[in-house]
Image (cartoon, rainbow, N blue to C red; front, side, top):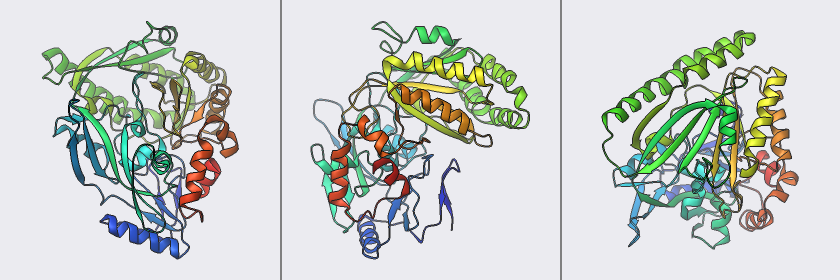
Length: 439
């Protein structure tokens, strides 16, 4: 049976499949597969655009390892250490945490991934003072190729290489995260000229530094952007105006722009490319100001039912305006048929060995293309701009870089390689993609 990812950019025909229902079963499957000389990969939610999960050996589903194992309050902080099975999907985890008065400190904008897949590929959100999901991990249980289970935490090289390592140091069985007290987000969405947004980004009084969570989108060749500024507030019932705004967002953004009408618009752009500039202008004009308040995970995460392909690079934050202007200029010059907006987010530095935000303040610039339209020329042009700016490609999104290109960008690249070699000398956990990007 053929496995394919959500974006339909990667597929494989594994020799075997397994969906262990316990850690012991997982350890047995991994050990037996390794002894038989078969490679082993875990598929997660299939939301990586790269072939990170593909294998001709044994493809694992960890979906049955989705239990909430324990919640340990951290005295004096209100925070808690939460241990969950590696296969739990983020939307399930968010609901479990909310039911206990907790939340993750930061989230990306999609919640269909498994927790193990999300941390292993470097899923992040936005917010100048906040890191990605891997930075919130405090412990892991990792199954080695011999079936041994390693319970590891900060300072252990296996932990440091595994919390973001594309599953190449072992199969993650369980994850311990530090959760924070539940909070709402007061969300303010405002359309604005792109030039004005770029001018407002930098400096101590800039919108990035003065917002808890800030991001923006712009539709190609329209000169218009939508800014999203989320402020962390105590949980509480929103007022009447905020309830109305929240309802409008749910209908317009999720059922029209992001899904129903946006799918139809992309189909028209595919059939009649000359109409795309006008269609983009219609989408940009449809954006309107709105303010609403809701629990954090409901604001951070949205459903994405319109299928697309994506490339995203992490660049030094101070270059964000310059890079975005270059991408916009190329789109205008080329006339490329792109009906999808460009997305820009910001995160804090972290100390995760292979994190794209390792020890630098980071801006993420993501380019998207509707899945039925060609994307190579667009992504190649964007990648040239990103690479020139010292960009690091998202491990789970489309790019053309290899280990020789990437090693100089990560001071701990060789350390991660040593841990992989120590724990998987035969390369049981590797595939063609991981060999390309990690060596």
